[in-house]
Length: 156
Image 1 (cartoon, rainbow, N blue to C red):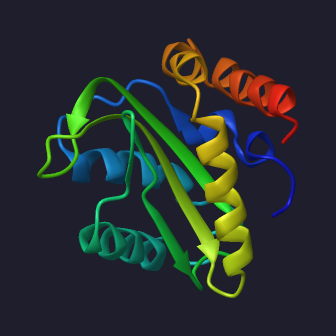
Image 2: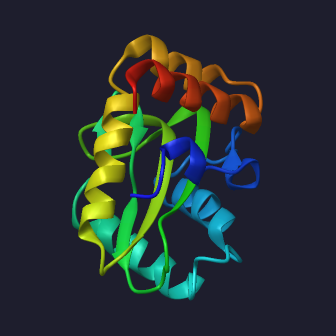
């Protein structure tokens, strides 16, 4: 994996106020931030694979966080978009409410990169106080700074 999670984030690919109430709409509104990304070779193909993967099994990590993802030939490098919904969105049939979505695309040829990103995200999201800082960051720049601060503290 090239660098830290914070280095994969960009303010233009973070939306902190998703105005949707459904899981698919949240996925759509977050994933579309990657449309036009230089490392997304085919956005429509990526999005189709993202939805197909999400239908297979829940991508909820618990604690109000979801990691919808696709390992696909439609991305050249790891891409990440973030969506946040303060009200929370019912995410699965168990009643899980998700407030923070990390939409991830990784190249199919690099499964190790995918595992490294998921592992790093799980470490970043473990602590309730850290999760709270991500859920209350007022701007995309502050969100990235909060991620970077936790990475530094954890030595990631």
